[in-house]
Image (cartoon, rainbow over all chains, first blue to last red):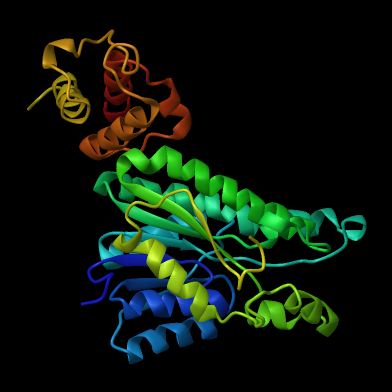
Length: 248
Length: 78
């Protein structure tokens, strides 16, 4: 028996990277998983296949988390397939990096829409079935840069700092209904998103990591499983750093 | 067939754990029936299920008393 046997989960942005690792890790613990994606249908199908190969249950569902209508469909479809939603992992995120002085309004809006508004919309939508059930766990993907700041990422950092504040507020509002809300703040994790960074930026970041190496998506996924499961039954409103000690 | 008032009263008694005699039309959920704001949100959710209708956030904000809920539902289900 896994830690999450009998539970069902939605993971947003689960077609690749950290989201995929989270979806697989939740499934390994026995959870049924709705693998959400916005664009990469093939990759999402691949995530589903990887889960099914290990005997898990999953299905892929397209939804843009910044659209209230899409999010409603995502939640409705998951309720239809699984009958309940016990776990929400708000992972979907994009970057449109630029120096503050060069950042276009559109770059700001796009990142805030997906990375912050998306968390709000998904949280609001799942809170309803979770409140009725008097239980549920929500795990939001923040980032260490949301705590420490990062040159060239004003939009991303503002969104991630916002996610931390939203996590605390949702935790306070929903605690009496048995719903816990926490965040995980990854540091420098090897994914497509970080592969795009210039070499000198990567080297500069490495020098700031006490554990001296990049993180793996699995490291983040393990922390998410912990916060999604009863192992963390007395923890809510917290941000758990998974960053090799980068920000303390 | 139970009336709208009877069905609303039952939902309120179950959710807020108040005595049936306290559930009067003029009773305010928050002032008189001890509901906090989240209780009111949940009440509205349960009324939606009980009467199989969708209450928009804008409409839900206007429902403050037992009477508000009953007349809203009567109007929508008429």
